[in-house]
Length: 569
Image 1 (cartoon, rainbow, N blue to C red):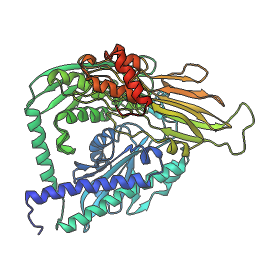
Image 2: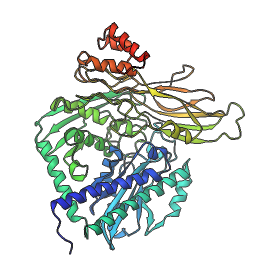
Image 3: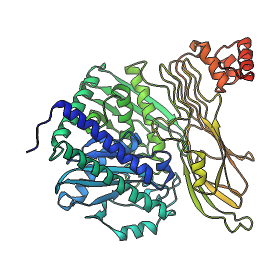
């Protein structure tokens, strides 16, 4: 019989589980083929109980992945069937509605057996560079055009990989080695988690996870409900409009605080878009829950119980509850704006807690390179797919400036230039912070960045633009100013669209400026020392320092002199 454990022992085991899944995630980072996983951290990892309830998530990863994956494991159990779950199995899907929202994420689930008995599951998700179809972008009119669909099925049974599945995948994607490599990396990271769990169970003499699961879920539920109970029983609405594909879309939400739950109702949001920016409910739910959880209970570990009191409702076939067969490839664009919409409502319930609006969605683009067609191409010219993740600025917080070129809410890292250029014949000619792009305020918004991209000699390319905030910049809060808008054009001045596949001829460059986060509070209340510091660092121009913050000509001259002399400000 397994020994009884004290609360202290259970707390130690809880912390150990979190470290187990973090090692699981780091194994994926180290072994993945795709730069989106290795360099940007676009992944998630977690451990689940027998019923598919998430017990712990890795620190590394994105809220969209991990919170969507929190619902996914139950789908795997139902689809595979408990009588069909064997030791050595690995399950796979990229189902947008039972996975993480689009075909470009692969989720793998592995059952974990201890001494021949099923005790739980490990799951992980990674964004992959290509899944066939039209490629990663918003141009499709239905999910059927967006790539290869893999229903929930077995990648491996009793340790034996399904080679027929592998051949089908290889025959349908542009980067087969990368994708198959990532699939094996996902399976391996689950195996690493399983090994560490077995070591933990042996160390603590556990026959199963029932006791520790109950401890984790009960304490998380109670702590979260205490946080909710301390809030005022109020209801408020929030709204924001973003670019959309051809026409703007509006997100609306009513947030209502009850004694034991918070309900976010997205009734009134725009309907489905004809192009692939629609967001399945599982992904909208992931980010709505995340927004409220970081606002009121950031210190409570993320698991099934701490997420359960946050309820999400949305009309079927609205932009945040797209159902099959809606195109959903760029569901992250809408999903990443969900937190700011929720914050706009929650700020009316608990003022002074949430940040101003930020850049929101990632500033991603994918480059499809090929030998030039307008003239003979050199013999070493080749086809390649290069996906790069980039960020605008985050919104200013009530007591802190926004973060420069930092993705909120996704947390995905900006890819280094070296890693991007290593992935294919692409050249990043410029990548630097964008002065004056952060909204002014008592707390300044985070800066966006400039990027210029081209191809190596002998290549032309298509660029898949995945941008927003071209026409709808981030809005300030409590008197703060708006962030700068997104711009995109070719180096000859030819304008380009914020979304969609666009051709770039041999020798041309694409010039991009990514949006800034908005400011918080009246800019006249910003301490002069911080204005001087921003000017010295190049975050703001002398014109902004003078006209927006009221810095005197003499102070501006003094800062410029100090910079010229190499002095610190």
